[in-house]
Image (cartoon, rainbow, N blue to C red; front, side, top):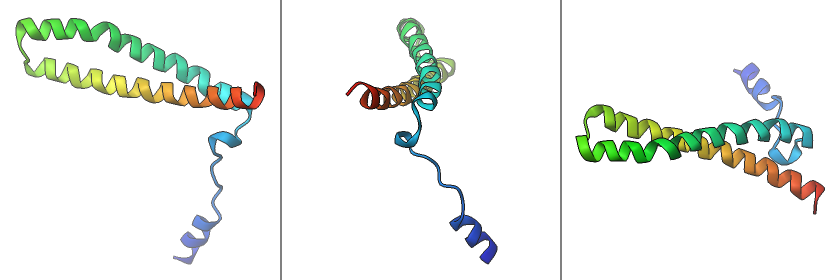
Length: 97
């Protein structure tokens, strides 16, 4: 048990966003922006069509699952865009202010 306690206390601490250098923030932020933009554009294009189909055909189980999938995709897109915004904010704060 002491081994686990010492290993836990001596573990390597993770860096915060503010401790990363500009290249690491760019390496994380640019792909996050691209993925988040793609996910949100898919949700933006598909949701109106799905709403129209659900109004004409009702809400079978497949439609409910499709809405749940789109909701999850929207949340994932917002997460990636939030990461990209944080990276962008740190880069702008360091280099342009």
